Length: 297
Image: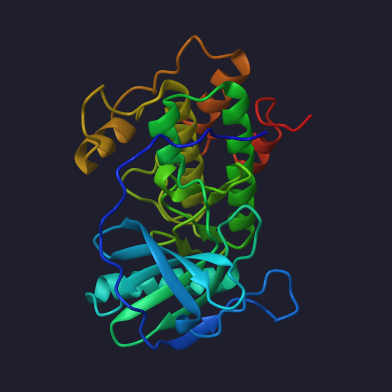
């Protein structure tokens, strides 16, 4: 089932596209040139920049094309001469990308770097993000939400097996390819945890660190699912901006998140299991994959 329709027409980004530099290879994720998951990108200059896909405070994402094979890739360029905290976070992201290989997670083929830039050669997700799809479609049907929730859960199951907490599951970090498949992206807030790490945060109901962090990813999934159903961010009032202080208050202090009565019993129960305040009672990824709302029949 195709998950999304075409995005509404938007003004194109007009950022200039700087020339590629001669980066040295930091590592290549592909195991061999004969592997179907391998990439022919040997140097950053193998890629031709075609358009700007997005820009943030730390860098820019480009649509690129391999000069020889004409294959398209996304190129995420980050400034590597940032402060120590950002540099450490980026190093963790690189380490995580070296470990993961799943059809439910956006593939990273290689990383290149020089003194000023760190470049991630990524799988191109042609339909953009789930955030883009929500802007275009406003709300999704339960059938569509069931499909995307199943894929996100399978991605989270893989990450948990690798002892990786994503830490930032949200529509803008869930990308969609031209088949309508949703995949998890952006590991800038992620961390690798040791077995048995049950770290206690000040707001343990949400989930920080270790097993609590895995429960936090489930909470975030529940927020995404509910947002897809009602067409807006569900933890704040209509028109309010979800700043950090407001989110902490909504998550830790407020009563349970209201789930629309218009949803099916299966949908309401699924969201309720994701948004259980006490992380110890919250649904686990394995439990939720068996839930009637997302179970593949």
